[in-house]
Length: 416
Ligand SMILES: NC(=O)c1ccc[n+]([C@@H]2O[C@H](COP(=O)([O-])OP(=O)(O)OC[C@H]3O[C@@H](n4cnc5c(N)ncnc54)[C@H](O)[C@@H]3O)[C@@H](O)[C@H]2O)c1
Image (cartoon, rainbow, N blue to C red; front, side, top):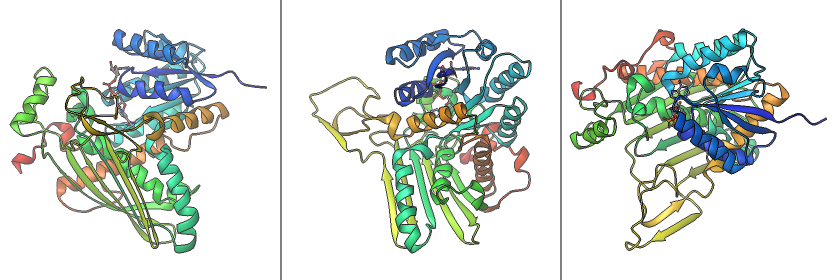
């Protein structure tokens, strides 16, 4: 007997919610039925997008509680800003624990928390409310990553030995909303915002297909952060203007560049390396995700700006600024790469299909809150390393309560 489609509610109807909604044209057995956003305009725009794509009869809800309590809603996607993460999850868990609604699962955007304590609380609340939990790390579902991993392990690793180095970089010219730039609200700068993707994608590549996360144990982390562009007075002025004067990168910057090197020990006792770099100061055509996987007789590389589709506009074509060619687009003329189907290529469709299938089957998603917590632990250890200027053993003492200086508003590389 076929099941009724899973009823999905989305919390937060902004940028990433739009990506999820667009991805839904490739997701089966689930309809988007509701949006909660305190900004009513955002909620109604998101509902309109859902309907225009034919992916559900979405209606706006007045609160998280109302949405959880509606038996039509079976699973929630948390897409609200980082600084609301725990309060949103507390409200979901309390409502479920009171016996309201019929919720089965929660899928939460990255990062799971702004620090280890918050990420732990998220996992704890999901367990208390007996909800299935999915961590939305889209890059481990990206077709190039999944297919590349499959081929490298089946051909290269099987004959020549496992890979020993994974590199991942995520770079663009800076986030679209002022709250991302505020260390206290977001949890950090680019390290927290984007290295979460890179460390998890690279860890996934180094893990043998089908093996659990535990086959790789983090041993040490060495990281570096700086503010290379956005603390310059001209650029700090742009951030101040975009935030109505709130963002102050002269006195309270966040890092716009970060790198990390993580050593892992495999279950066979070998050391393997993850190398990441992330930045908010890369000005190219748009968002650039680059990944590599290196082994004894093979290598893999991905660069999302090496798109198959390229379009040239002469200087006579003076169109409006937009993001219609690629995410975080920086130009509209010249030879431009176009990522033809971003929702597929960045992994959102496969990610959401996996979450929906897992919730329908009643099984825990393969990428879940435990992974989100692991990622947060690695990122906080990276901040610790950057703060101390030395390699940090993992697990580092004090990690559970650590708050990076950038999240306290006390970090400033100019004062070094
Ligand atoms: N996977 C990715 O690549 C990716 C990309 C972008 C953002 N994200 C993550 O998604 C989350 C949202 O980011 P965004 O870019 O969509 O931000 P955004 O600012 O564009 O949208 C956030 C929306 O949430 C709403 N909101 C604010 N407080 C809320 C609350 N208490 N409950 C419900 N909604 C609330 C806002 O009104 C806004 O519409 C962040 O955690 C971010 O890190 C992930």
